[in-house]
Image (tube, rainbow, N blue to C red; front, side, top):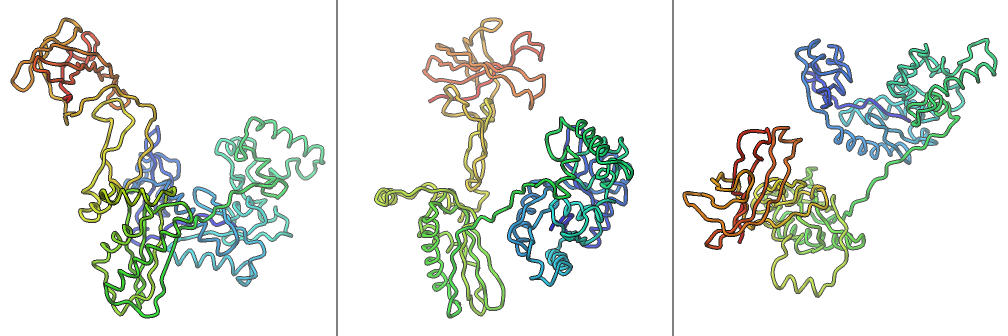
Length: 512
């Protein structure tokens, strides 16, 4: 079974406005999808946004989110396993479910497809499901066939598929253009290349000619004959099923509803200990915990806690969760408490005596960060993280402590850097030997200092992809004045480099 063209159901006033999703390309923003009103106004996927707005000036443009769409598609594919034992995603807008031998559980194939449409509608989504013996046939019917089409295993595949366009074979755009130039527009034409009066030899010859035309194409999406054989079931098509990642989860179903905070704290502490045992069995530590509270009146309360580092310390987890329960209203009582670790990371076992000694000497840094974040708010606590840049002021950035570290370029080995780096380099006046000699005297903040020792220069090239072609080189010097104070200064530009006037000098940092 293939389900495609699922989309969010919009309010009537929003659906009536022409809207398109756009993606940035080398030729400017292009449309990746449009709603019905946008399609009616002339917007088409692949069209430039400027061209679409020439047809429809009121077209609203919203940035596309391919990563978010893929994540939603994976969740939907897992959710759709209620109709079959396994499923596979079919980006960007569909997925496949194996329902072999399962249709009778829903009252037949027609009722199964009706159940699919109703289930998606209940989640605010529109869907076009189809049933077929092969993945290619199901995809073709879902995208280009009638609504809720069914191809039985004993039926002739070309009965429903022969009149479909060759675009139903999941081919690349350039391959479709070649087929159109050859006059092949329908799947039936491709399946019967020799014509009604041609023999088997003529048909084989025409297939060979078409195969030679596309022999340099390696992917299935660029080979129409391979796609046709996959659609007819003559060639198997491997699929990669999605698998749900089971997250650690513990819960307490209470005999008597909880109405007091002290009882709830005790239950949360017990759940934290149970969670630690579950994480220990997986050799993992929690980075995000989600606490769910079910009340007697049907309301569900959710509290989320994120940690600076993976941990399995039950007391620390219990304290963090307790700090999020200040505003919980028990109502008539809480009957079920559930704790799940939606984000966990590998965490090896450690010796208990060493950990206990560390706790006696002081609070761990990760635990301190967690407490500060809970007390001050996530945006009030940040940490410096390295960034792949040789420019000193861009070599690090500030990020929330709970955010995962972004991958950075390895091997950025720097020379000696000052202990204090100024927020902004300050201009200075430097006396030096012309044209590119070392500094001998400089003035900074109203005082003139004589240079007694110089080390350098260390040349740092500009990031031309950020600063443009007029950016100038930097030559850094480590200098020392007569009082023993050490500075980090640089000359921006070289005399006669054609990128501005004479070089400028700046003081960028102070050594200890």
